[in-house]
Amino acid sequence: MKPLVSVLIPAYNSEKWLAETLRSALAQTWDNKEIIVVDDGSKDETLTQARSFESAIVKVVAKENEGAAATRNRAFSLAQGDYIQWLDADDLLAPDKISKQMEAAARSSSTRTLLSGEWGRFMHRPSRAQFVPSGLWCNLSKAEWLMRKMEQNAYMQTGSWLVSRELTEAAGPWDTRLLGDDDGEYFCRVLLASDGVRFVRGAKVYYRRVGGSLSYIGESDRKREAQWISMELHIKYLRSLDDSRRARAACVTYLQNWMGDLYPERLDIFEKAKELSQSLGGHLKVPTLSWKYSWIKTLFGWKLARHVQRRLRSAKWSITTCLDRLLSRFQRPVDQARVFGAFGNPVGRSL
Figure 1 (spheres, one colour):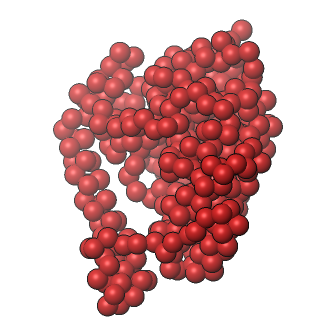
Figure 2: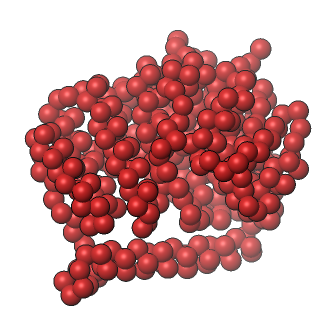
Figure 3: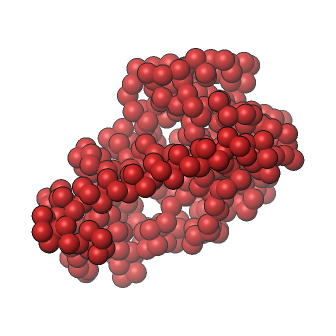
């Protein structure tokens, strides 16, 4: 009998996208699957949407709002699968995504091989998804994968992984303290428990970017604190695998890359990061601003410059997403056919 794959979908206020996501999960060519949706106390019609899909394959559970990490832990507690496919409630799986990775799993001699795949960003039109390879898109040892992530400021999207139950249980639960980057920290632990990463070319996930991402820190002080916790853990994990000069330099680079989200609002964290960098043999610099915002810093200070920078980026993002949404209304049938045409129309029409 084919191994059972559990597709686990945490959902919160996802009524606009959940139906499409569920159709992409149901359209998987790997037929031995279960789909579990856990609604995290949504205030919109997410739960109603999910329950309209309930069947022998799709199970829906509702609970009070506790956050993404706690919701993922609840979903896993209900899963019966031999393999776990994490899927956010607004993302899409290519129809053969799981099948391709399960074929790779069947060729592996270990159930602790961590399977990754391709992922591309899109807003409203999957055919416009940009699949941009990084240094992580290949077979890698544990230490090399984590080193490249921190050196190159790279990552793998949550849905790109396929993880055996054995490996999932060995990694432990999602960390409920982390309001952002919970997936980054979690998959570090999955990585540590694994035998290494096998990259499966052609196993695609479509990562929808429409604003409101959990990973966006913005002006949330709680998210800044959570990000610092995640950063300390990342460095601890890498040094447990490799404490070479290169590894330490990668840690300093990683710290520097995140300072733009923490400085100047959290000078206490910046000072801790400076001390940590020095202990690693490096030197942390004060982040810089582009010319568009540096004059504001000179006249009015860092905090106002950062505030303006975030507001303008948010406005630009809103305009871009609105334009893409309008175009999607005219191109939807053709767009879906381009991406999913060979397998029918798993994501259906726009809600």
